[in-house]
Image (tube, rainbow, N blue to C red; front, top):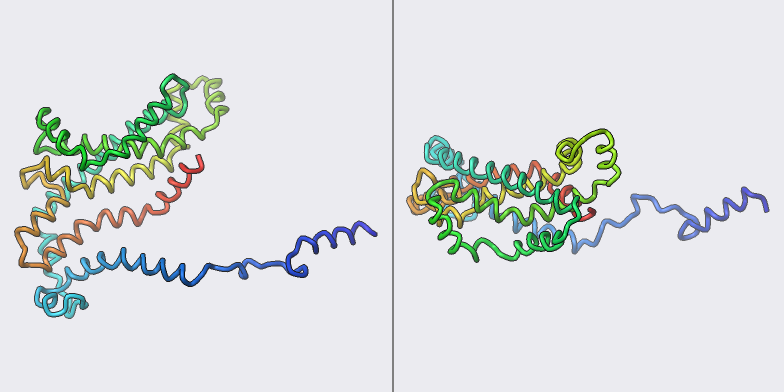
Length: 297
């Protein structure tokens, strides 16, 4: 038998079902029940958000008459009143400062700690990593009372610093756990080559480690920013002056002052959560890619 015949027979043997190739279009997409379940879950997640946003375009009479209806006619005064009020923008600025400084501080400290844990071999390295992992088991609600006493002792009550520092501390565990696999996956050969070229440890960290671990840095930064932006319990215990309120606390104060004006409360709430939603939507692929890289590493 010729070589061409043997090759043709071997190819036919590898083809399923009588030698027919399976095209990509014939691959099943999944069961309909799975798509139905996904659609229901998406509706449960997006439905309340859409209700709040659309509720801000309605009047109180429309909400009372038909709570689940669409705006008819559309009312823009609720949003314009919130956007033209100084209170909203003061609280918006406080939330921006708090979330930005928390993100910068958390990522900077976590990078330093993760670099040491991932790249240096020393006694107690695994115990140190386990200590950060154990921090995930202690939510803020458990430590709020001793944390408030500590902040009061330091004289940081009713200040943004009193909420920024604890937010950095509670965001560090998950940030370190995500960054360590990224830094550990950097080959040793790159570090050795950098050392031969005369680059020190700091130079290698700034020139090689940061660019290679950028997906993890972006992922952890986004998670820290959103967590700080949506934080409610810590500002509730620490802040007492209305001019120091962040937006989550401002929503609660606005709802208490305008309890009879449901449409205005919905408009204030939707504008408060809109920055975090947009931020998460824009960088959604970055978050998924960063978490995937952390799992692979």
